[in-house]
Image 1 (cartoon, rainbow, N blue to C red):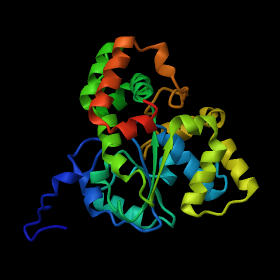
Image 2 (image 1 turned 90 degrees about the horizontal axis):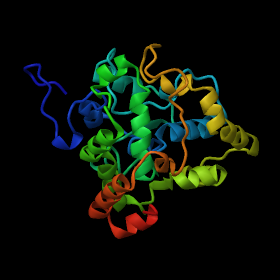
Image 3 (image 1 turned 180 degrees about the horizontal axis):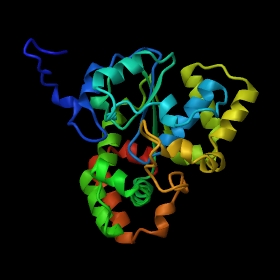
Image 4 (image 1 turned 90 degrees about the vertical axis):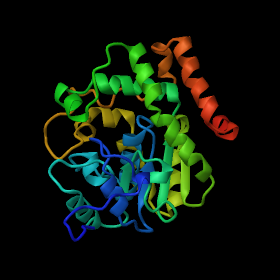
Length: 289
């Protein structure tokens, strides 16, 4: 909405601040539908994987997309070539069921009581290590565009990751919604252990009917091996063909427990202590922390 003086009115602070990856105008004016699905995760918690899983289940097995973000857009991420109004218009023209990715907290999520929400959570130690490699694998242009500096050391990265607190804010905000009927919360370790069962949970939750052949294709195209071989479909995250990450490095390992190869006992303790300070005991138990 524009005022009579041509100015955009101030937004409720709940929608957050403008950053290279967060546009509060889009969140404030987004019109959710009951058929929408929002993937809500902390960064590096299996977000891209869940985008692929849901797109493959929705499509019955599609390999013809150029970028996963074309078919499962990042809801709040600005586009340098579009106004926020144009971005919302583009979203409005998408066919149902629409699927979006978001890193928003529960408080910032539009339509939280109306849309279908699928959460994936991951061990914070693995998230921290995965983010470190994610930043290292960015091109210089990408780091400049996003304002993310090159970490001079892993130890300093851990300091910055803890200070940023994105994982903690996300998990803490969503835990009260864990047992809501429109929320499905999956754990990364369970997805790695038995993706077929997790896919069944997803289709049951969304009431989607798929054939055995469609599920087999979805499993194949959502495998680490297939995604690694087609890394370019997941590393191009804006509207240009300019590479944002070093070739073949966006889909890296996706392992459970990979933090053990890099993280010291003291770093682990700090990450876990912060989790124990801010999260409910039932939440910690569910997360196996």
